[in-house]
Length: 275
Image (cartoon, rainbow, N blue to C red; front, side, top):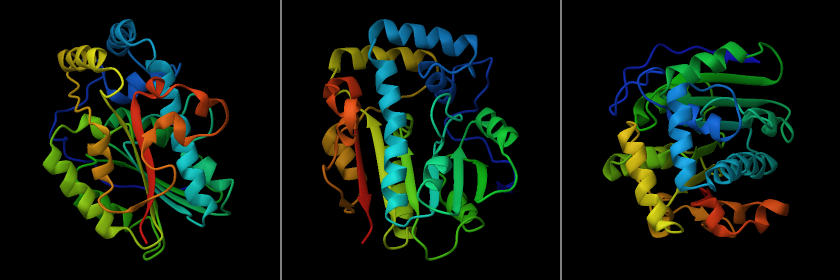
């Protein structure tokens, strides 16, 4: 795996991530997925959340499956470059994004982006130089479109389509205006035949539990902005959303995952192409 190095990022607008100060979304996800890369503060929050919403572990698993599925859809249609925004820690179970893409493409370029320095340091330590993958990990706020896209220029072949992933991350960005500005810049930058996939937690299926979850996360220093289905549909900014449209995350998948009741997903998801 070939790597590209970037300078350190400035702290994100919503505060630094400290493993002994407060939980992080990446480590919380790792805990819900059965991984080992988390701290006591993450485990304590996970216990509180699961007491309110015991379906969270399945919802997180479905979100990770959606990452693999969306990557496969784009790679199977000829995309060999991927931008994973809010990538989180490497998968405790199952292949990572670049490994899925290699199933369909001989060579792959990937830029993983996360604001958590723990995520970036951990991922860089696991990189295996050589092989058919050019990969980079960028420590940056996903809302900082200028930094993200300028860094992407050092990784990707210009003009070739890119698969962009925003999975389980935008609910951590409560500023609707900043999210819209970032998406507008991202969509304008995407070459034709690029794909944008989004999954986003919602209160639509569990309104009472969602209020408690939001409160628990706020107390732990993690802001949440759960969005409704119309709001998630609007995030795609006029791109051509593939069938079956914006649905519960599990309904994007095949096999047993598809048979999960929509409320288990607790999130909306979709895949769109820029024509």
